[in-house]
Image 1 (cartoon, rainbow, N blue to C red):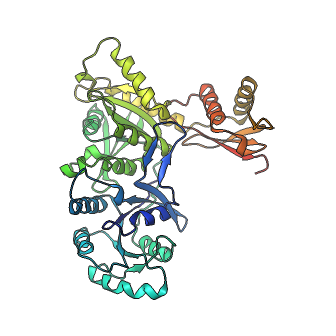
Image 2: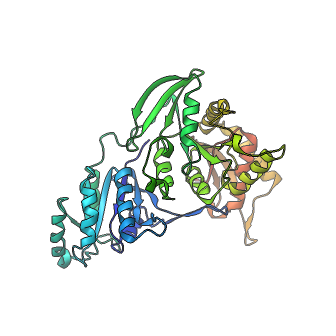
Length: 438
């Protein structure tokens, strides 16, 4: 399913991040209980009128030492590129400024719906301060207060009126959708071309929900696939490629429409922090994950090089230890033929459903080998039974006497035992604790 995207744009100090935090529920950082997966959040998920949508906080996108005016221009252009609807935030206490007008001139050329939110209007007496903002040319401004939540409902109602008619389209159930993601210049586009160039039967090319994206459908070994467009498949201006966090935004759009994610690394350059950020979002999305090390032909190697690189990947990407690793060269097509069989395997594992009685045998054997912990030496966790409640990813509910007693370390132990018992390579899994009668 592809969720529409809302971008929040505006000059500094108008309250963009406050609005963003309110939309996404105050969750401003992604924090895993594994080291190395804490990232500033510039992309969040929000809900309104029983529908989910994504939000971009452009205030989190910075471009090195560029002057402020250039920062604002780039942020506005990213919003234009990625968003279905743009919210222009202005400061009602300051009134209309030249910087507001500069941002609005860029947005006026976008042909995208733009809604003006006049922030810091905390009470009725202040609402007369919104009238100057009519001159920006976007119609009715909406008085809001990000800190108190006042008026944000009316603003979101208007945003929803401008979402595309095909928002929340479902993924075709008989087709494996996979996205090729990664930071710029790791060879994503070359890898896609190499996959498609190996005597595949091309079914169609159609526009995706990412702006100007083309998703390509094809058939291989009687299985339908669709490659979901990502950053490398579209030519962009140099300014975008130099924006570190822009690759994350592109990856997130692709993740919305994929069953399986190929996280592409540059074997020649090695692993950098941005690789982990992109992989972290892939993990958090709950999609199946495959790590593809590209440009392996350019690496000087001996009989230990591949094992050493694999060990480094497992160390740096410990949060996706379940992901298979493939070493390829898109340039020479070395091992590229292995990609689709692994994608198919991961997709099957991602959709796997296990019998309840087998799940309970695995859980009870795990408890017998490693008894459940006690809280402060007094109350012991008691597991009554377990069942699978969902696929994509496989999700298990463990019914216990007190969910608070299931510590993350013991939860991880149960996850590992389930992995040992079932073939779940490439797929994340979830273990949820609930009280017995819930």
